[in-house]
Length: 444
Image: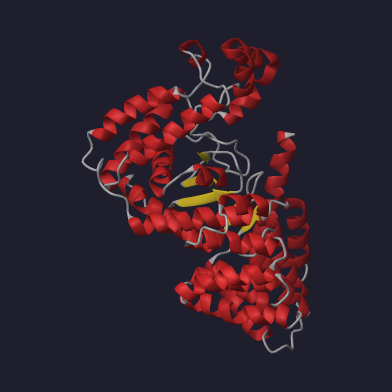
């Protein structure tokens, strides 16, 4: 794991990133658009994927997946909202072709750089056709999930959602220009003949159509939400600090930049390089300006914990947990620190608190494998092997390790009462694991 609080979950090949602050921002970015689409924000997930590709996709259900590369490419929050609006158009249009979820589905891209792109870069439309003739149509078909008509429908629906939400379409247009620039940069600009071989409309055609729609909308000249924009710039910097190489982070956010985003990015990059004093200096400067910012407190606690100072991490993590009303991801890091201080000893001064914190965390968010791992440590330390095995099964299932999840669930079932809540949960995991294993065998 990159970190306890910004951690990848392998629900896709690249892995889903969980972070309390990022998830809160994505929910707030999407909420007005989700309502405009006639959906319930409580039922729609905006999920961050650890993938540098500039992409977003849906894969069945009411979930929009956004790659970290797209956040990095976007200059402002409005551009990301334009992407979310488009993807919600796919959701409401029922365009997803694989309802098994992102774990099994190919990426459903908003880009027009899709079909036989590499071949077209080398030889235009004929090369793209050659790729198809070479038997690659099935593989490319997984990558391209929508027909051109469905893309156009999603464009139109996304524009209507932005309008209903009172959000300017400028961000959407700006992002489509970025996609066009990417096409040009990699030599993927296509002729009308090439367009015959792609399921997505040409990007310049989409820009022209949407520009006309957006400029007539009353929200076209509406200013951006400054608070949302400030939060977006923080998140963008945070992802760079956590995901990029430290040298790349320092180039993107050099020391002469003294704003919150730059310090945020550098704090974790310096920690990754082993410069704890410099990392703490950046973090303490952030906290001096915002002493009750829960995410700056979380950052400080996480860095101290990962640097081998769990006792010093307790105060900022406890405060961050309190300020966020026991947000499960932050509480999990706090629970981890509590266990680390006691070195896993069940008679330690902090072990009982860790037990309460982690049980509360998984009760509110069951899809957190690191929390289940930590809870398993507690059960094992208390010699409660069946529940330790059940916690392992929960963790392994979330990580897509179905054979291991099946073995752990069956081991737990050997000792748990069959009709107890834990016994029933172990049966559910075992059943899901068997079905997943059988499905994988059929696919191969």
